[in-house]
Length: 163
Image (tube, rainbow, N blue to C red; front, top):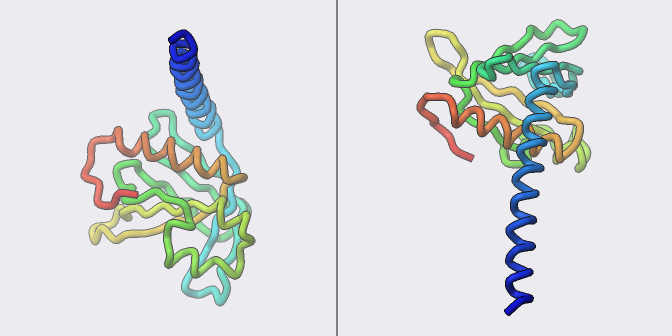
């Protein structure tokens, strides 16, 4: 019938618009990440009695092969993570151990903005490290996780953890 045809055309058009919007969102995020985006690092060093927050900026290199975190005005050293060294990218709330560590220091809204990256250190022992940070919003966190996951999956490597 004609109404079914119109309905199916509307669905196809809506799906195309959503795909186009997602592509534009990803391109905008990539552009802003290359220029640098503000984030709040969640520092949980063994020496600190309480986890601390450190304002930072992260940058994606022009080749989309490395992500750098530059803490602002702190003694914490910058962190550079090569895309092939990433082992996992997820929301902070997806990691039971990390959310348990941070739940008393973060509001419910902040917990929804948290990101956890696990990566291999570039030392000979190939030890795993983690970096936790807050994005500006839950939507920004979702976009970070989605776009970085796509970049990560495009790089030739062996993935050890899937989320």
